Length: 115
Image (cartoon, rainbow, N blue to C red; front, side, top):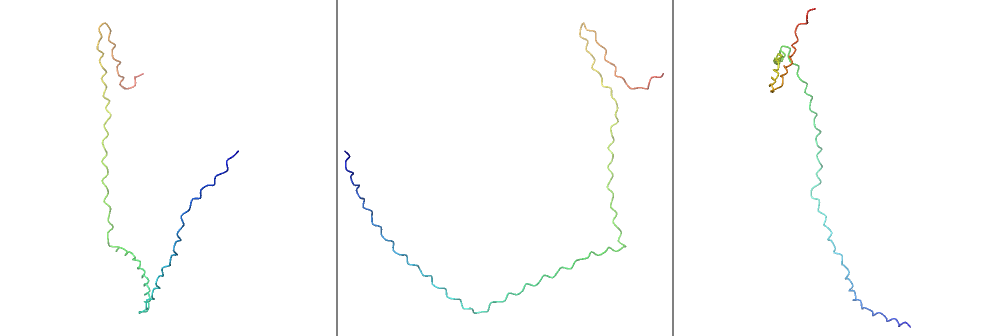
């Protein structure tokens, strides 16, 4: 057997205070300013006078033409003469008990052998 449903207690809602109607604030109508002086007619901007094209004056024929001074020619750097200095071969320090190997003689290119 089910128990009879208990009615929920009704929570009294606070009565909403009606918002008073907002009275629109009347903006005072601006008094039209009396036109004392007639509106000044804008003076037309004067059109800019075109600048006359300056024609370059031809030089009088008597004026000598400036001869450009030639730039000094670069002094040639003397190339060092390739002197074949024979590189001295290190002298083999004789190790005791070992026969020193004589250094290989550097072949100097000489005149071709006569046939």
